[in-house]
Amino acid sequence: MVFEDEMRARLQHVNAIIGDYMPKESGFQKTLLSAMNYSMDAGGKRMRPIMLECTYQMYGGKGALAAPFMAAMEMIHTSSLIHDDLPALDNDSMRRGRKTTHIVYGESMAILAGDALMNYAYETACRAFDTAREDQVMSVARALCILSEKSGIYGMLGGQSCDVECEGRALTEGMVEFINLHKTSALIEASLMIGAVLAGAPREDVGILKEVGNKVGLAFQIRDDILDLTGSEAELGKPIGSDVRNRKTTFVSLFGIPAGKARVEMLSGQALEQFDSLSARHEFLRLLLEELAVRRR
Image (cartoon, rainbow, N blue to C red; front, top):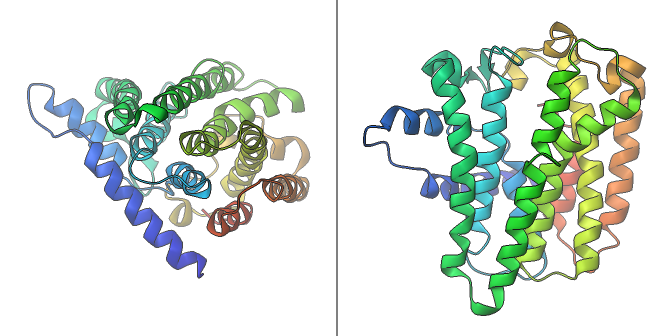
């Protein structure tokens, strides 16, 4: 298998699924729907829905049961990016190589678009009940519980709130790790877990996948912090140096780039070791987890 070819095929597949669930731009709320679609159409790695489908397939999942959750996961992630870019937070004007939502639609509509995508994500995920067999209904319910927890105050939003409140303050390593675990790792954990739950994976494996996502998320965020200092705007599709500009404490600002690279390598190695202990295998997903540790964007 050629990783790049498989990645392109999966990315195209995920984008098609997302497109199927996005709202038509009509009615008096047309501008809001347009802002939602603009934000989702900006592209991105789509790694969360890809991971979700991979674990679904890994444990023998068939059919379209995972599709609503794949779209919902990307909606929640994109919702967080819209709000992250707002003047009240990171105040960024570029995201994924194009103008951010508040630059195009204004700050008020961007706030509403972020709120709308979060709510519409749950509407979309609930559509899995429409195709679930009777023996799959509880799995869909469990998946919804994971999605809700990992995106809420004990997951992504909790991490974001801490990130905002602590901006400009000197933080300890423990506080930085708390932010990273909740703001970044939580949705990666959810993606790996939900696909497995929908396919009926053993509970022990779902727990291991949570730990894999935990470490992959930490490594991903540290790698992101490194790229914010060493990457280019052309590669990343957004301005670099935002952490320094916003006076954010990161693992890299505390310990330096070499230590950051070493931590990424260590966390990635531990995640792959745990992944290899699972009762099922997925060659592409393993390659994807490896790739995230050395990515350039």
